[in-house]
Image (cartoon, rainbow, N blue to C red):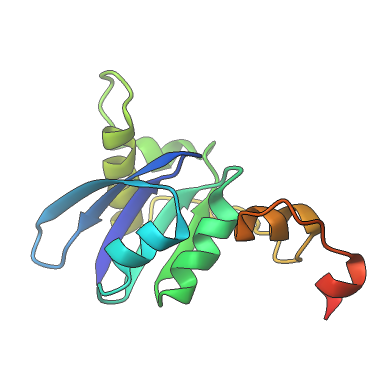
Length: 138
């Protein structure tokens, strides 16, 4: 199984893929549903580790829809960063560290709120429409 670490940001995200053969594949993409589908949609099922953040829930759901196993991790868990060097912090290094932590199982899963809310629905769909409570409960 491949292991991925994704350093998710609002505009762009850094992806690091550790393949079964030991190859390291790194890509930087726009943080958009279409770009995740284009880059990761045809890849074999993988375990993906992302940090809990504002964008993490919709990204996690998007990746799960593509068939991947997603773990949203607590960013305050020190063991997750044990392999990171003390050099300058970059998105590339963070994504690589997340992929390595994913492979080693060195993370603590964050609690995911799977209840839809108007704000989450709007963010996930990328629109300004407000949803009623009745629409969200259907």
